[in-house]
Every structure is written in C-alpha cells, then in structure tokens.
Image 1 (cartoon, helix red, strand yellow):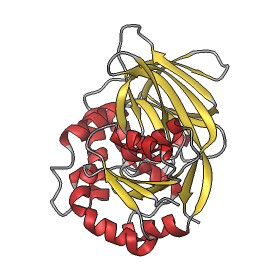
Image 2: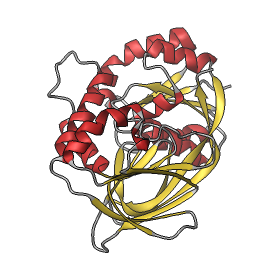
Image 3: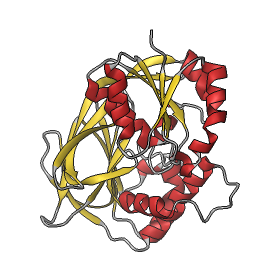
Length: 316
C-alpha cells in the first residue's frame, strides 16, 4: 500500500510554511506516522499533483497550506474520478474550511486527527464562471463562493498582506486582523454591487448587495461565520445576501459577522438552494468572483451542489 501523500504549499501562511516545514514534518511524523511529500511551485500545482497521485493509486492525500491549497487538492481528487480521501494540515492565512470541520490549528493536534479521526462524506459545490482569460470554466469548491465587497477585500489582502502587523504576530491572528482591517478600509471606497440572482426554480431577483455568498461551509474571510447554519452534508447551499450597508453599519456589524449572529439583521437574507445562478445587473459590468478565498474569474456564474462527493478526514 502506498504512503499517504502530503502536498505542501511553501508560500502559504505569508510565505512561512517552507521554512517551517522541517518542524511541521517532524510533528506530523511523530503523531501520524510515515508519509511522502511534494512541494508546489506555482498556482495550480496542488491540483495537478493531486490528480497525478490519485492516478498512481494513492488513497489518502493531505493538503498542507491554506484554503486555496486545500481547494486545489480537492479539485484534483474530484477531477481524477477516484475515491481518494482528503486530509487537512492547516497552515495558511484564512483557515476558514478547517474551522467548519473543527480541525485544530496546531500541527501536532491536527496530525492526531489525521491519524485517529473519522472519515465522512461531504457535499461540494461546482461552479461554472468566466475565467481570467475570458473563457467559461468549471471548478469545485468546499467552502464559500461570493461576490461584492469580499472580492475587493481579498484583492487588498493578497496585495498588502499583513506586513503592517508586528513581526511576532501569529499567522492565524494576522490573517483575521488583515481581513478585518481590509474590510473596513475597502468598505469606505466601495459601492453596492448590483446583481441578478435566481435560486432553484424561483424567479430572477435584482439585488443591491454589499456581499452575496453561496456557502457550503460556515466560514470565509479569515474567520467570519457568514453561514452559521450551513451543514456539509445536507445537499444544499446556504445562500446569504447582505444588503447595501453603510460603512458605519458594516463597522458596527463586524462582531455579528464573526460570531454568526447577523442572520437576524433586516439587511440580511438567508435561504437554502441546490442551484444558484448569478449575473451582473448591467450587461457590460465585470463583477469579480471569489471561490474558496481565491479570485479566479467573474460573473456570470452557475452554482450546483454535488451531494456527498468527497471523503474528508475530520475530528472523531
């Protein structure tokens, strides 16, 4: 039987994973046992490496990195058509998907989950959208896809990072602080996003939103509990629409977004759906799309839930 494969993104956690890998590998080995590993070198590598590993007969692939790395590995497994289990060794900036699965952040405890945790089948989202090159493409996502303020926030975080934070700030806290500060700064310069959305067989609705989220999991944006009622195996998306809020309202509502108590706000709507179609209200407007913390393209987009499509190792 082949060893489990760890796909490592050395640039995750603001570029610290590569230098920290010897310690991570030691902790993983002591708690989990033998494994093989391979490093990514560019965007898309994790997906391609996962596809190759699946075709070689590897049955357990562990993603070491952030949400983008985890999503790429999951896409590789799903694209391969093989029934391969996904494991998570979190070491990234946002860490949103591991929060829903309640995977510990510390390597040693996360490694114990990989060793003794249970396997469960979870839903995944499949989204068709317009890629950066202008062509229609399809990919899977595990956590949340969104448009609106979130895309501008992620763009700012990726551009500026957490360089303004003290050097000894833990990367998990730095991620949350970066997303939170960027949200306020971006809101001060942004206007509402005008979209048209259709859920399942309902009529199209014109919406003016601060953010529109199609959620399979509960968290996005570095720890915001945007979809607090989301379940990973219910066969439905949680669709959360945050209306056009003022900057002051966004600032005062931030604690509710992180705690997941915002669904009671009159500006917020929440519903369940298996299929969601979203487009820009204005034909020529380009609206960016965020998928699992990455910005791969733009609207129009069609989201479809794929029930129990992926095996994941999680807390017992």
